[in-house]
Amino acid sequence: MQVLEGGLGKEPIRVLIADDDPVMRSLVGANLTERVGAVTEAADGQEAWTLLLERTFDLALIDLSMPGIDGFTLIRCMRAHPRTQHMPIVVITSSTDQDAVSHAFEAGATSFLTKPVNWALFGHHIDYLVRSSQVSSVARANRRQAEAVTRAKDAVIAALASRVRHRTSRIIAEAEDELDRAATPAAGHDRLDFVARVLNQALNIEDMLEDVLEHLHTVTEQIVVDDRPVPVTRLVRTCADRLQQFAQTRQVGIEIAPIVQRVRMLCDEDAVACALSNLLRNAIEHATPGTMVRIATELRSDNVLAFNVEDQGPGADLEKIAHSLAPLGQRKGGGQGGSNDATLGLPMAKAIAQAHGGTVEITLLPAVGTRASLILPADIVEIVQEHAA
Image (cartoon, rainbow, N blue to C red):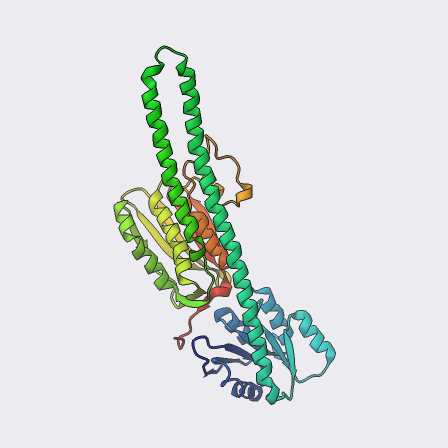
């Protein structure tokens, strides 16, 4: 394997060449290094697939006739994996057999080149594919972001409705009781207390509205989809530092477990940090004073990344959590016996995760507490190589 460094400024294009012919790999690399940031060579399909699972590429040039995993199989694997399902794939083949080309397109190839390659047109062909892929990527990111913002606003509005419904139901119940007492001779002694209780509930609603309106104002700013490389270690430490003072006021410690090394994410750092901070804040609020909240990272199968936040406490109310995470149209209840303070941090974290193709999982740990996991998909997780910056 050989890596040739080029450069196009801040966002270099990363290309993978999979071909068992070293001469062909060298020719393709030589004709690409002035146009892209880095060209990585793979001598067969197995090496190419390993590289595709570990790193992020913008384009793949694949020979159909390779030993072991051939080009057709490699293309099918790429289209079935979230990291590579949208990557442009150029098929390079020495055969002009239309059946081979047709089978390559059926497997998921984007375009094809035949050997011998017309090098005068080769670069323009690659430029066009990369630009088209970037436009499609931006469109997908914008769509995910818009959907996530909508879900987050629904979550905030649903939380507002739940809180208002709970508090107004209490006011109604107390008012009905007061009407019943008004018919008795002792009614005058209780009216002052009733007015005080109603005033207190009204002030609580006012404070709650201010809190919800603040969340609505910041939803669009916090839910962003981007592809800047962010080291996992930095993200975890940023969130822990951000909530250290809050944890001290709650008499709760923050423990950072050993973090998976040489892993970074292609995401918006502020947005994902907001999601992880919301999970951490929620854990601190529910932890028993004198205990620790633990942050751990886990690289799951196929490079799925999980940030696990565990608290030691009485355990979360899973029904309340499910209610707060459910879409707006699926929420039921929330009246007098409903949720008192539907949390806003969890749906916000889930919306940010979904904007990046992930989700939030909540697990009850028997006799221990609760684990909240921020799950991010393999297509934005990158294993940093020893030579990478």
